[in-house]
Length: 321
Image (cartoon, rainbow, N blue to C red; front, side, top):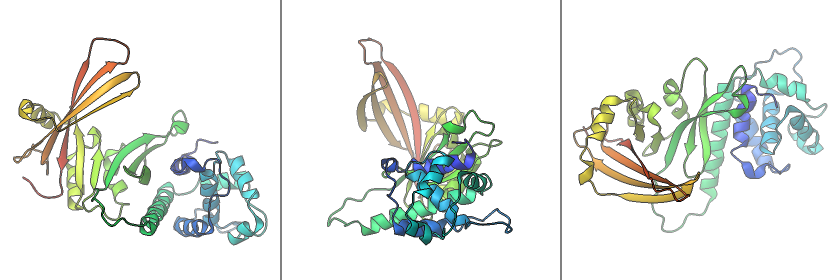
């Protein structure tokens, strides 16, 4: 497949549903309708003269084809050609069907941001519908919703002239990307932090996890204003806060949690210590400090252990300073 940015975006959607890779008939009538309605919000960049196929219909068949396993323009064209006649008619394709060249011409000129927003809204609506339909147990322990904001480079475009880097919002429990934005080559993830989270309608009492790149004061203020919590890794890109975290009396803090895992040729043990910092850390809304100690040892009988300390802060939605 061509490594154009827009196909990389849709390929990211297809990756959200890997169990459908071998299925060609897994898109229901209700999903057709809902997806068409969502994609109808994407502006049509084509000139009116010579338009043969509805814009939303082309986007819908592309998304559904890729979710069903198509990974090239030719495969998408074949997937459309194999649709039952009544399904094509329900989409408004009563005559000729769009070929690979037509599909390519549409995808290279579509508004990526609008497409990402439309797909994200559709995914969130589908998840909400599943949650509503699922039977609820009589007694259920409250589980906090956790979202991760993180960037991802699209491997298919990494060596092209215009590599694609996406900043996504991942639901920890479901493993689904709820929203994402394209990171332009001339910038980085930092200014797009709030842009990505703006796509999530309600962040009340949600915990947001981010890496050290997002240890920015503006990033602390944004979730606080929306009633959310923030868990942020702190490294030496914030030297003052990092020093304050490092000099806390960790020897006097008991271990709160320990995990051990095996992978990548080593055995790794992680211990967590958490302490409340009533006076703050000179960082907006900071209320807790966490020390993560990682001890790794090669699985082979090598006597030497490697220790590494990492730090994080939690920034609850309530004022603590």
